[in-house]
Length: 215
Image (cartoon, rainbow, N blue to C red; front, side, top):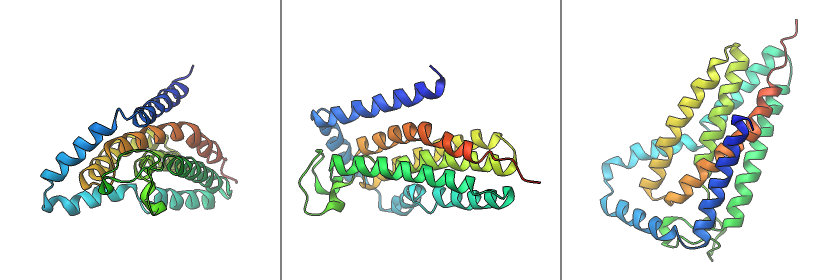
């Protein structure tokens, strides 16, 4: 088995394990304890720095940058394939994460209920698990890397953006848990699901972006 397939398998199994742990009410206690400890010790001066860190998972950061580079790559190569590759990643990511959130039905820490399939008045209060922001950083930092590599012809961009993505993901998940936007297991599950999606979808974007430049 290749390293890529092994990574996908391990991340997928770890995600399933976290989900089972929550469903079995094994991890809800630690989630509550961590959230309560953070709430007691939260510092007002760190609110905006944490918000900036959390924003790394927004669509206007890595996905938007990926879109800009995909368009530039398509113009340079005179082919729509890089844009098609990015759209494919985005659709797969959105469908998988969105469907999982709808299935899990988990509310955020503000509600005080860490259980899956919780009953909440609004759909927006049942979309906490897994963290889409965490998955977003992992998937689209890697996507940006392969697009930059295709645009510049320098394959080192792939490794560079993996490093940037890892650092950004660490900042983003720390911020979201600190701010009380997500339970700790939401963040962990988002990272794991993001790693699995990255391994499955980003190679498609890489293949679509490798169209030779037309003379």
